[in-house]
Every structure is written in structure tokens, then in C-alpha cells.
Amino acid sequence: MANILIAGCGDLGSDLASELVSQGHHVTGIRRTQSVFPHGVEGITGDLLEMDDSMLPEADVVFLIMTPNGRNEAAYRAAYFDTAQVLVRRYKNTDQPPTVFFVSSTSVYGQSQGEWIDESTPAQPSSVTAEVLLDTERLLASAFASVAVRCSGIYGAGRFRLLETVLSGKAWEANSWTNRIHRDDVVSALVLLAHCALNKKTLPAHVIVTDQTPVSMWEVKLWLATCLGANVAVSNGEGFVPTSGKRIQGQYLFSQGWRLMYPSYVAGYHGLLDAFRALKK
Image (cartoon, rainbow, N blue to C red):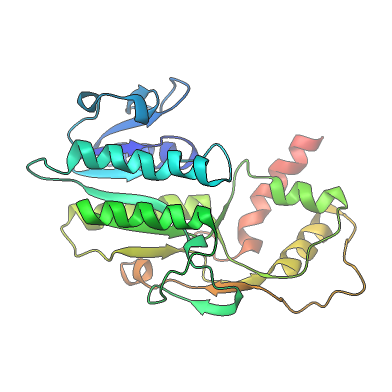
């Protein structure tokens, strides 16, 4: 049994916590609001930035899974870099510092001319928010055995934004490459990484979590529009070939035996569409 801290026990963190508890680990979860935690999880409600170090338990593994309150530099710095500083302060000088997994994003790859990206590709952030993510990765790596878990666009239960966009009739933006990963596959990847750490496997500095199926955004929207009976809002002057974005694949997780439950957006969106239709009735 290991002691595991999940700093950010929200959507992803709660399912991760439940899975780790079912495997016999002692799990502590922290969330900013709400006091309801998954069964078997020792819950702490409060802002990590305001907590005394004594509130953070001894841990063998720590997951940092935060959600910013906005899409600007200040919100990202508060959610990611500042919370990482708390973990560094609390755990860096302990007798056995934990392995830290930081759920980051493939937005640290700013390449946007259709390039193929994998774990050997240098990060080249092209936005201030991506710079904050990379700064956070570097901060944690300077203090711990840490892994940046770079996820592509996460979709899944309760995430209806793209469906709402397709139904809205709003004109589609220029076509681009998009890369996706179902939230359930993110959880399974994090569980696998925890096992790797607890089994003392050598871990890379970062891993990519994506469904290995880069696709054009218009292809996704056309399929969703067909499923929803929505109008196709494409200007006649636009071309179908993607004009921006990148195509992402990862290797490390598959080398460790990871298997996708949803290997493409078609597999992943079926359940989401059913839930969305039921919500709209």
C-alpha cells in the first residue's frame, strides 16, 4: 500500500482516486470547494495556496491536477506554478521525496504548421499560458523525480462545449488539425504511471497522452453535425485541408502496456452524444 496525494481531486482526480483506493492504496484528495470525495478517500477541502504545510500528508506519489479559473497568464500561474511551489516547499527536503506527476498539456508544443509531434520533439510554447505550463514542469523537475503528463484535448462525460458549438450554427473557423483523448483514457494512463513509479521503474521527464489519431477539426464537426442533425456552417471560400495545428503521437505509455478504451473520436463521442441528447429532451 502506498500513500498517494491527489492535489486537485475534481473530475479526473476523483476517478483516479477511486481506482487507486480500489487497488488498496491510501489516497488523500484536495479540492478547493465541496466536501464530498469518493468513497475511501481522505478529503481536504481548501485552497492549496492557503494551506499550512502540516496539512499535506506524507506521500509516496503526488498528482497535481489543477484547473485554472481563466485562460490568462495570471489564472494559469495561480493554478499551476504557484501550487507547484507549495509542493516543492512541503516535500523537497523530506527524507524520501515523492514522485510527482503534473498533468500538463500538449499546448507546450507551439508548432502549428501540421508538424508531427512526439516525445522527442522539443517544447516550443507560443502562448503565455503554455509558457506557464512549461515553467511549472521545469520547477517540479528541479526539485523531484517528476513527470509532466502532457495531455491533448480532453473530452468525455459532461464536456459538451464542442457539441454546443456545432449546434449553434456559428460559422466554423478555418480548418486545423486537432488531437484528442477521452478522460477515461487519461485516468487509466495516470493509474499506469503510478504503478510504474511504485515499481521503481525509470520514468521519462514527460509523456504524451493522446489517442494517436490526429484528425482535422472539420472532420470531427462534420461527423458530429451528421449525428446531431445540425447545419454545416462552412464558408464556400474555405478549403478542407487543415491550415494550422499539429499531429501528435506518444510512445512511452504504449511501451508500458497501456491500451486505449477510445482509440478515436468516433468511439469516444458515442456515449457523450447519448448523454447530450438525453440532456436536451
